[in-house]
Length: 74
Image (tube, rainbow, N blue to C red; front, side, top):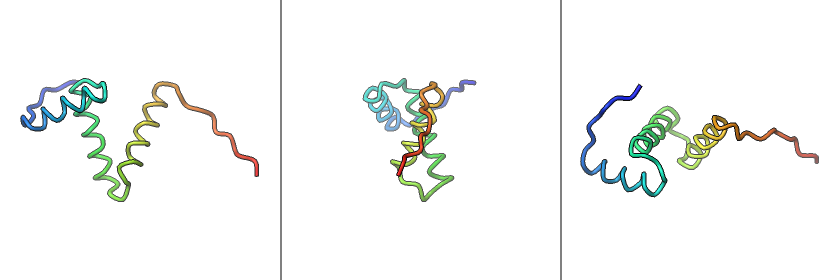
């Protein structure tokens, strides 16, 4: 379900720039930032890179891009 929200002008300008750089819609960019913020609040010890990698992995799974786990010999 989509809802309309008002953004501060500074946030909107930053989100528009980031959305263009990351090839996302404005709504998807704001949602991405909200997801990062929510995860960071729930797990404050996780570094940003870990959060970003987890989110990328979830999106890859959603797209059916998962790879089977193979145990290394050794």
